[in-house]
Image (cartoon, rainbow, N blue to C red):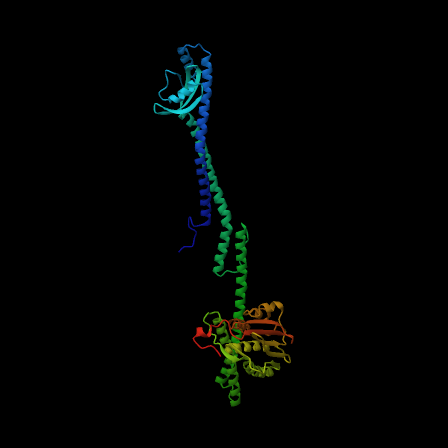
Length: 470
């Protein structure tokens, strides 16, 4: 399905429609309120003009001779300039058929009358005045006389409102373009990010909300570039770590295959080296698999009751031998009494081995490596300290992130691939604990893993379908 903008689905079109809708609604309300007011005002104005004309006519006729015929002639003469107005004389004996007798009585009583009546099927404005005792003057004019100026006013108002709607359309269009232009730039930048382009930056502009979106996209772009840079460094480091044992295995295997090594003792020594390098390669691949599987929710953790002090002594025996071979002093501070916890002993040993491997790599000849287990009230802490170059505060914040320290110190000091420490951090969390690092009293780095006596991330024994530990 096309992701391109469609009419009535874009912010621009909706902004224009909203603006036009508001303008049209305002115009309709204005017309709905104004038309009755204009009609009433025009009718009131026409009635007032007719009333003034009646007053002037009555006064002029009163000043003439009082012969009835003369009065009628004078009225017609005065109204000659008003073709739409007709004058009528009424008396107590002779009234007008279209005018309510009660209103005629009001006129004869000397009270002015201003009303509407239907004459010959046509609505008329009616104004009545008493001229002399027993004689009244009634002026009539079609109601359409008042509607003409009202219609003209309404027509002018309608034109003005139409112009306003057209202006609103223009304003809505310009506003939508102003608003959506920076959004389109952000969308285009996001689209380019999805295609793999990095280092993009959008100039923040427009309303505050759009500026926030642009800033967030810029932060995301920078974070992606940093993350992918670390991934590249991580892959480079892994490639180096894999290539080193593979090169050794290949070289010695070729020597064996070509007969370069033929003496039984040399063959045994060569085979031992090949096996050692293969085991190193196997450990690295296993760590990579564990690191990847730790992200999966089904990563197995098999918690059992075991003595972590005994596990520490077993690990210390192995690492003491390796440290002697490298000229490094190994020290252990492990309780002699049992320290029972419920966790996964295989993963705990994996944590110790990775920390010890990292410490031995960084520690110069003659400097110490220390393995310590400290039981506490609710937790037990594993410590591996070294006398190496140590880490800065900034290094400590990223020590358990893959390849970060490798990218910082590659070519400057002995560094690993970053797999081991990343694995330690993830395993510690998966076992319900935490990993940390600080400066060691021995001068180097002190890595710690704190584990609970009972892993809270594990399901309860009842959920696992087994009996609880005694």
